[in-house]
Length: 185
Image 1: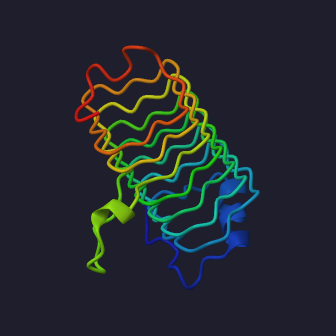
Image 2: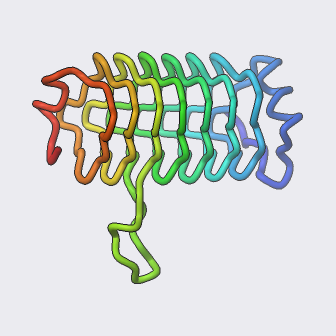
């Protein structure tokens, strides 16, 4: 693929144009864009930068987000069903009430950011998946330090070799042996 569109040139309208014309959005810099409410199902965002993007109520089902950076993105009420998020950076994202059913987050980073302010790291949280639906989601080998999974449906989810340090699971639904092969639960 040739040179991608630069951040200063890219607009919400151009994202829709690329998506509608079957052009790949892979490797594009989409940081800070408001893509809320869009239907981007089956899109290719492989390796794209979506840092601080607004993806509220966005349909990203069956989307390839492999190695994408979504640090600080807002994915509240987004549909990520069957999305591929392998090795993606999802640190400090907002994912309240997101649909992650059958998604693949293998080796994804959902952890908290390092504190630069000198404050206690206990105040730094990772991704907020509170109330998410993550039935049969693959979290294998993911880094989930300080992740909020309160009231999340994790039935059938896989956490093999997942680092679950300081993860909050209050009110979450999960299989009895879900975390047997996880690390630091």
